[in-house]
Amino acid sequence: MTDQPVRIAQLSCGPEHSGVQKEIYDAAAAVNAEMFFPDVTLTDIRRSYDAFGLEARSGDLKLAIGRAMALVEGKVEADAVFIATCFRCAEAAIVRNELRHYIHEHSDLPVVSYSFTERTTSGTLLTRMEALTTIARRRALLAREEQKGTTMGVDSGSATTKAVIMRDNEIIGTGWLPTTEVLNSANGAIEAALKEAGLEMADIEAFGTTGYGRYLVGEKLGADLIQEELTVNSKGAVYLADRQHGEATVIDIGGMDNKAISVQDGIPGTFTMGGICAGASGRFLEMTAKRIGVDITELGPIAMKGISKTVPMNSYCIVFGTQSLVNALAEGSSREDVAAAACRSVAEQVFEQQLQEVDIKEPVIMVGGTSLIEGLVHEMGDLLQTEILVPHHSQYIGAVGSALLASGFIEEK
Amino acid sequence: MAKVFIFPATSLILSDMVERWGHEALGAATGIRERIQTASLDSPPLQMTPEDPKKGLKYAAVEVPCGVRGRMALYGPLIEEADAAIIINDADLSFGCMGCARTNELVMFMIRQRKGLPVLDIKYPETDDEGFAFVSQIKEFLAGLGGESDD
Image 1: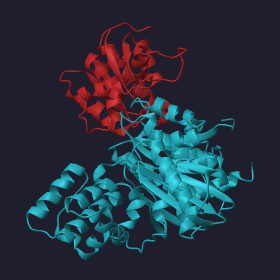
Image 2: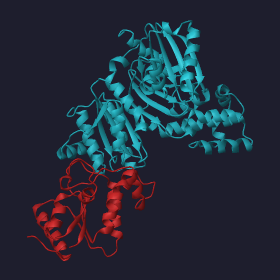
Image 3: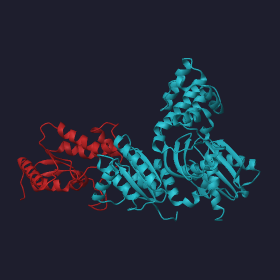
Image 4: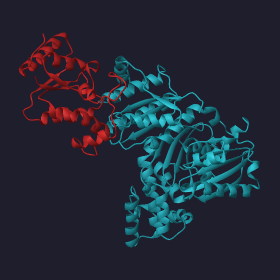
């Protein structure tokens, strides 16, 4: 990378004493970013603390408030903000949440917040740091609203690999395969998409990759753009839902982790990525479908016929969730009610664990493979008290976002 | 000479007062001094690793935030080693400040749990008069612990 390092302001409490400061530095260095601590004086801290009005008792949280105000007031310049505090600290959670909200409301700095334990590694932080640097570094690229030429996007996800071919702002080919061997799955999905489009690889003018296997696939096949899924999915979601301007919230319940992204004009402002447990992911719904003897594509319609509240289920952990599921079936609950309860449980976990960390702005757009499970979309809408948008081709969101952004590279060639 | 745990543990003024009156101050600098892993003596403090919060499990359970446990890995042994302690409540930021209020609560509790440990527990002064009284109280407390003053 030849770009100037992106400067990320760190507002934190506890990372040094938890032994994870090095992990934060390493994650930032991996994406050509540098962490720095906004320089404030004791007087600034006293003044900011009073002006902000939140009576934190911890010195480091007071310092974080002072630094946040210095950033918002333009006394210190940064490209992005990383807020990190200890997991399980209630006082820090309040401050973290309010600071994220404050910076988001009063500046255009991208913010990500994270609660760490001593087991947090640079690998865990990498995608978040990459998204932060992308937003800071590639605003011009992310501003693209129209796909041009013939481009391809590949989303090498943890559960499935998707490929999309686009030409002049239209999807002309799609392909997907379960992810097994990363490169083979990608090649298979690409082949299917090319076949549907009636094209050959030589016809592709530019292409991008995203998802867990993005580096492997992108580097092997010579992608023009290798990009994490937070920014790519945001872009793909607002593009497909035709909500490229203004606010939106993107929810992607994936096979391995979930993403909740608060978007402004197609660019992520705040986001969370977890990481909670398999019980709050698409995997649990796959298991539910298998247990009640239906294909995953049938789970949504079945769930829509059931009443979720008749079956107690708390799938924070996939093992306990499955136990509840088995018990409910053994006690005579209908498979419709069990399917509905499973959808409710996943929606509740995501709502309680992740959606609290971003500002929910309407419209709420659900994307990814799980957005096709209508029972899940219904339960999420019920929890959020809003009608959720599921755009056409929502399961190809990452591939579409990649193909859209990749068209920016045609002009460079 | 007594080993005196100081709170706020980062207070250089308090550390200096304890040492001027012939004792050894146990505070943040003490812990750091023994753990230099940086290029220079005055490099930023606390080169801690993820192992430290695990050592802190001796003082706080696993559900306690890792930052508290990491700090306790540093301060817990000092409190155990101390012959006396001085606690300054509501100290101004410029006097020396601690980053984590939850750790502060646990540190105070540990000090109070040590039966028979001489403790001076006073408030940070806000006026000149309180300032004179503050220094006198500390001097008197330290003199009562034995040791030699350098003034």
